Image 1 (cartoon, rainbow, N blue to C red):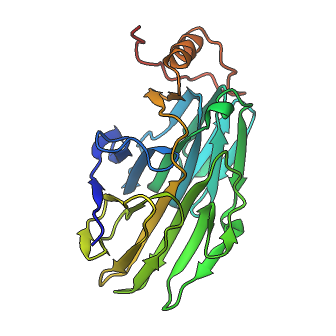
Image 2: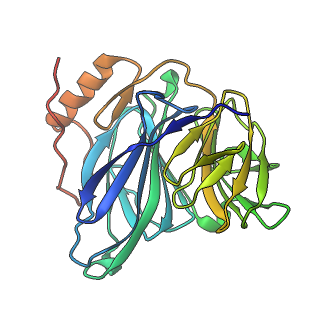
Image 3: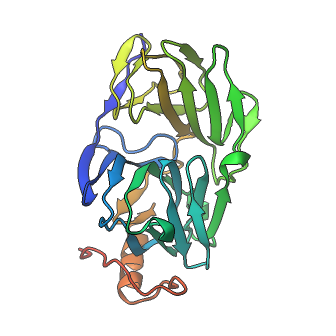
Length: 293
């Protein structure tokens, strides 16, 4: 039987009624492949008066990956990008040496009840990419490769390669991100598609190599191993993340990722001094916590 590492995450409320479960980083596991941050928000229907906007804030040394199951958001960044993201699409923003972005409700949704359910992940960039130019990619839902499984299941290849299909998302290191659905009680023989892999089901429990795994619980597989994944009576939908392990350990502070602490300190000072390029047409900015030398 596979020995699973289970990560339960911690809950916090970021807006009225909107709770986020942060699963990575965890004391027991800092990263899975290049993924160093894993947030799951919702599912919830937000009240019309709820302010779920996240104002301008900076990043360095990482790529943010946004994927929605329900609802929609509008992404704006200091490159001038304005992009609505809807369920099934992938937003991949490479921060490199520095970028500022905001995440806001769609104007058409303001003043009305709206759904919110999705994942936001961070991928640590390789050391050689920490000073890269910032960039942004959007891949529409219809451009994500899909694979039908025997028995009626489906795999969406969000990032990386699986079952002979390759995502159009460009990555800086070997990265895997899948969205898998299974019909009731179906069993999937999940191969070892990456050196490191983990499974996470937002709303339904799974059985992984004979062990029950609850909704909202991440199951990290032993290195280099796949697993037998069984859906429950209601079926299952889960994501698989992973890839090659980090070249070097990274540090996280606020919204910054770096292999060297001095890079974090420099970015904190640069944000405080107004040194990041602003988002065109936006003035709201989120203050960083105090930096302690």
